Length: 585
Image 1 (tube, rainbow, N blue to C red):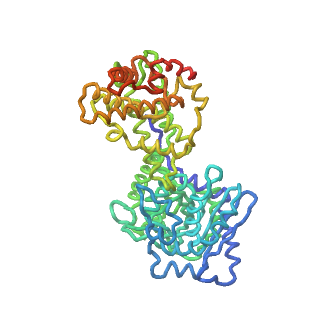
Image 2: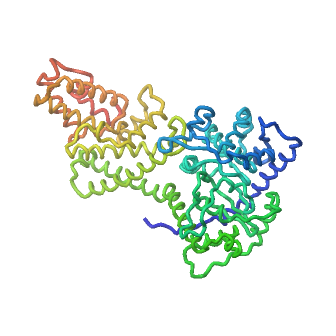
């Protein structure tokens, strides 16, 4: 598949954020809240908060009393982390972030302590949310509280009916370890909810970052327990740029720090707007043909790393910094594009359409696509094998991505994705079963079934409401439908094995095989009554009809007991199945 060039749009995104006035409104709310603090709050409640109802949005702002902030940031234990296992016992509000693949995370203790102090008003703040866009903002440690409140809120609100909030922090320190970072990064819709504004002169966002050696040949990330997430708007007097790759953010937070005085976030907006409107474009050598590298060079210049004096002070090699930032950005952008590449999704839809056509052609030849694929007659079956392999690789990755996401009680796909995954499972798993039994194997359910099929089926069962009667739409769409139980053909194969064992008397446990056949025929009758099985099973050359002939033979021999009969055997012997496809049972 052809890939389009990779671009870095951080400069343009930064300019867009600046000119949208969202930063101005957020900081105005913070400034007003600071202006209301006339006396120190109690140490039991060091956080101030307020809801601002604007014409076009709702803003919830958090700040902390400056002496309290200083105490938390400079005091002993400022970098202490609280593990998710400890939080589960004392403050279980973030347990939903734990998943099977990422079972542990840690959060900065001072940030958690401040958030605990507002625990009693969380539901009140949630009640202030309306249909308008929601901005949650905070400065310094107030930004840490804002980030934790946003995470809590993302788990509580119904994102199907409510807009996702946007959390904007100013000069906020990092709040968690790589476990917290991974939990949020695995759910890109959540990661995009965080925008962190950081000035090159603000030490607070860097206070929990361990130093690293900028003279190393590979500008590795600082060895650090704390990891960033979300989008970072890095700002200098020369301009600004947005970055999302966590490793690049960590390196550049250290590399861009410039000690100085007279810094205040309230002054940045006018200066940023001026830089956006009347900016000096960073010169890029004409020989640089790669758009990603060119974009990175302009961003580094905008956030202050083009200044020779600063580079000399920190002993930073600019070429090395460019090269390493490009590598990290490329890896990050490719990762994002692989998950959301619409071309890949479109190609998967084409593969499904090809297999639906393959299924129809097989039925026209009086053999179902299951048996046609199992026997592998010609080149069309080989093509179907290729489509099956591509779809399976795609959905294994999709299921794996969903399992990594923060979720409560196994919340899975949205309805649209679950519908597509269910169609895939019902179309493709029978082909896996065909290959499995073609190779002479037995007991597919216990030994051969892929876990991603099991997970897709589990999510569907959690999402569906049980039906009390057959759905008329099923009757009308039987001809092109898929069998609802994607393991149906595995049960058919096991039933044929049982018939063979009973016919030859090769087992010491004949009753076990008899019971399994009685259970199978009852299950099939139940599926038929609910129109839950495709009519292709009744094609003359299908494995199901071969099983029925074998089963009928052992019934006639009396192996199933004297005068064995059931609703299913009557249904088949009277050839009522001919009325099944038209939906006339």
